[in-house]
Every structure is written in C-alpha cells, then in structure tokens.
Length: 271
Length: 257
Image 1 (cartoon, rainbow over the protein chains, first blue to last red):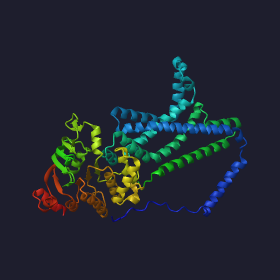
Image 2: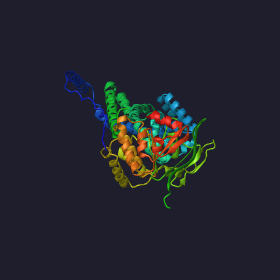
Image 3: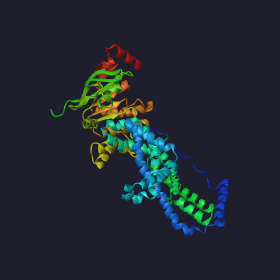
Image 4: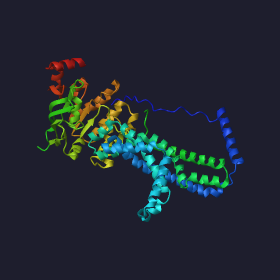
C-alpha cells in the first residue's frame, strides 16, 4: 500500500531563549536582592513557633480543596449531563441550581449555611440529640458543603459545554457498533468530555484553592486562619502575608503541573 | 441450509422526517458476498437508507432482516417505529460494522484502542486476543506503525483506514460504508479505495454509498440508483453504467462524467 503521508508535523514550540540574556540577568539580580532583603531585613523569628500549625493549616486547606473539588466534580457530571440530555424537569432543576449558586457570592452562601442553617439546626432537640450533632456543631461541614456546591455549579456548567461539544459522530459510532447507552457514556462520552474540559477544570481548581480561605471566616483553621492568628499574636503585617502568598503560589504551581501531566496523557493537535 | 443466504434483507422501508418523506418504500436484498453500490444525487435518501439498516435512523415503516433475524420493532405511538428489543438491536449492530464519511474515530483513544474497543467491550473478546487480531488488521490496512498514534495526528486517509480496521475487528456479517471518501482530500482517496477494493474482492458483504462511480463500477456486483426516496433502477454495474434505461439515471451518469 502506498503511504502518502501528508500529516503536517506536530506543533513545535520555538526554542527557549537563553537564560543569560542581559535583561534577564538584570531581572534575576533584582529578584535576588529582593529575596535577600525580605529574608534579611524582615522578621522571621516567629516562624519556628508556628511551623507545626502552618503545616496542619496547609493540610486543612489541601484537604478542603481536594475533598470539595472531588465531590463537587462528582456532582457536576450529572448536573452537566442533565442539562444536555436530561428530561425536562432535571434539566430545569440543574439550570436553576447553577444559576443560583453562580449568581450569588460564595461568602454569602457560606454564611447562610453556617449562621443560618447552623442556628436552625441548633433549635431542634431531635437534631441536637442525633448522632450527626457532633459534626453539625462544628464549622467544617458547612465549609465543605458550601465549597462543594459552588464547585459543582461552576463545573456543572463546564461539563454541560464539554458534553455538548463531543462530536455527535463519535457517539453515533459507539451506537452503530452496538454499545449500550451506559457503555457509550462510560467509555466514550464521559472520558471525551473530561478530556475536553481538563484545561478549564485546571483553572477552576486553582480558583477553588483560592476560595478555601473563606472558610477561615467561619472559624475553620486552614492555612489562612493560621496566618491570621500569627498576625494577631505578633502584630506583624507583611511577613505572614508574604509567606501566605508564597504558600498559595507553590500549591498553585503544583496543581497546574499535575493537570498539565494529565492533559498530556492524551495529546491533541491544533484545536 | 445452516447459513442463511441473505445477509441483509430490507423490506418496504419508509422514512419520514416530519412532513418530508425521504424514503418511500425501499426493498433490497444483499446475499452473502454481495457488494452493493448505492448511488444517487444528493437528497436521494441513500445515506438515510444505509443508516436505517442499523437503526441509526429509525425507519417509519418496513423491516430489516440480518442473517435471517428480523429486527423486532414496535410502534412509537407517533406513527413511527422504535426497537422492541434493545439487546437484540445492540447484538445485531455489533456485527454490522459501519464506516462513516467523517471517520468518527474516538479521539481519546489510540488507533489500537479504537480497534480493540468494540471486540473487548461489546463482544467480550479477551484483551490480548483482541490486540493480536487488531494488529493483524492494522498491518493489512497499512497502519501497524501508527497503532499508538491518536487519531488527530493522522491524515484523513489514515483515519479512514483506521476506521475500516475498527469495522473489520468485529468480524462483521456485513459492512456499511457511508460515503467513505467524500470527506477526503483528492490525493488521499486512492489509499482508502484500495483498501475497500481489497475487501470487496474478498467477497465480504458490503453496502457502499458512494460518489466514486468508477470505483463503484469496478468493485460492486450490483448497483442501486436511488431517486427521491425510491429505487429508480438497479442491476449489474455494466448495465447501470453501460446501458442505463431510465432518463434520470442517464442524466445522473452524464452529470458525473
């Protein structure tokens, strides 16, 4: 068989420029001096005292991020699917849910759940005596719920677009080869949609990370909560905040890196 | 007689899209080993007809029988038909391999995964066996080297050959080709036609909707000319292309050449 390969070569990024161009050297020098000044002239003696708290705060933040993103995404799949292929009632409910959650501030939802729902629960002896009460009287379940619902609503909308964007022909091919509805969904539609949505999911997970400090407002001690505590104790303003910025920056970098890896598992060209 | 002679038997097929009747009663029988070319102008209903055979479009009336087994249909309550037995439809579909105009390869899978997907997931073939079969088929269509490539990195011709490999992997009772070269750049048509031609010479049962008249004449043993949802004329290729009877067919053939 004659091979007439006409595939254009895959996109190759232009070679990176040298690190040692003059303007880069200057920028690096300035940055180096800045870091040196921050370390040398600012006060960091409080750091060892709070390191254990900081680590557990970072843990709390990450736990919140992963738990709410994971559960939120599990909810987002049916929410997105319902809007694309669901019966009218489900479609309507999903649209309503997404509109309400996306249309109101997360901080407001958080406070409504914690101060509103939390205080209503407290009024009912049945609830106070139930096995759930030890959890319901804490703050984190409300933080978890608010962040999860928020992620579900935003990603539900993303998944709606992703589901709708999978070419009909690919689903038709699955049909034509005798796949059941469930197989078509599980093997073709869902993985295809997730793959399409990955870049957006990446961005939204980073946003979700930076929504987590809101739970510090309802007394959950995440890394932001720890830093606030440091500021109250030490009367320092800039040092704790700079450290906080650095921590979020590193976490974001790691998230982006992991998602990039996931995206590259299935290379796509062009688009 | 163990093996039914008829691979596909379509009886009085009607298809209506709202007020528009696209197919007005088509009957067609494909014996085993038949290569039937379906030709006709655009809007003649030839693609719709093909898609009704594996129920990608639900016919409004009529019946389809594959290897002696008639697909059970029931009324959908709105003057049309729907499958009465989903499992049966899936089972029959899994052996009626379709090749699409726009390839419709699954973009999130490699070529090899595309080819093994249906045997493993639908037909229950063990994975290593499916891979071995797939590799043999990919060698045949000249894509063995590309087995780990994702479809978006292949040329149109390569993608269509991969799609043909996917169809062959289910060991189809019959193959349905829906304008397999219409979306290809002219210089890529040849490589795909040569693969389909090989399959035709192997006496695989196939229904081929095509605009490639020269090719249809070469590989088919029966040609069906559709016009306005009806079979206007049919017969062996020499007769259809050499001595067309109906005015419309004459006109159609002269407009192509």
